[in-house]
Image (spheres, rainbow, N blue to C red):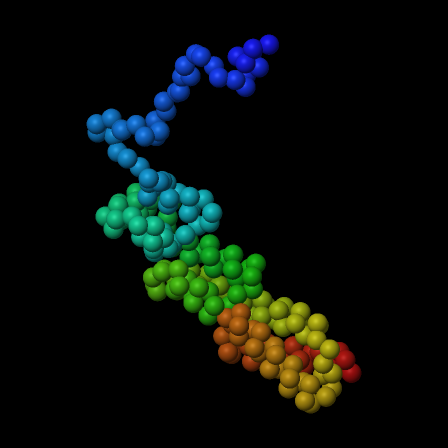
Amino acid sequence: MTDDDSGTGDSRAPRRRSRRRGDGEAPDRGEAVSTGPSAWDAALRLLGVRARSAAEIRERLARRGFEEDTVEDVLRRLTESGLIDDADFAHQWVQSRHHHSGRGRLALRRELRTKGVEAHTIEEALAAVEPEDERAQAAALAAKKLASSSLDLTDRDDRAKAYRRLSGALGRRGFPPDVISSVVSETLREAAASAS
C-alpha cells in the first residue's frame, strides 16, 4: 500500500477548493454588503415573539443601530400591513394581563405607559375592564392570599396584620385604593364569620 492509497500521505494531485460567496470574494457591483438582518427582518423577529407597540419596535431597532429614517420606514410598512396597531396591542395587553395575571387598572396603565402607548389609547383599552370584574378579581386574589395565611382572625392584632398584608398584595397588583379597602374589609369580615 502506498501513501496515496492510505489517504494519509502527500497526494501529488493538486486539491481544488471551492470558492463560495463570502470567502473573501468581493461582491459584484451594485450588490450591497450586509452585516446582519435588515431592519424589516429584525422587526418581524420581534413581532414573532409577542405583539409589541410601535414605540417598542422603534426603540429596539434604534438600539440595534438602524438609521432613524429606516426605522420610520419599517414602522410605516408594519402599520400599513396591519402588523402593528397600538390600539389593538393595548386592548390585547389589558385583556391578557387582567384575566390571566390578575392585574388592576392602575398596574395596566403603568405597564402600557412604559411600552410607549399613548394616553388616550390606554384609556380606551382600560374602558373594557368592567368595575365589577375588577372587583371580582381583587376579591378572588384576597381570598386566595388569606386562605394561605395562618393568622387568627379572631385576634385583633392578627386581623390588622391580615388587613395590611392583603391591602399590600392588592396594591402591588394595581387595584385602586377604593376597591382594595372594600374588598379587604369584606374578605376579612366573611373569613371571621366563618371561623366563629
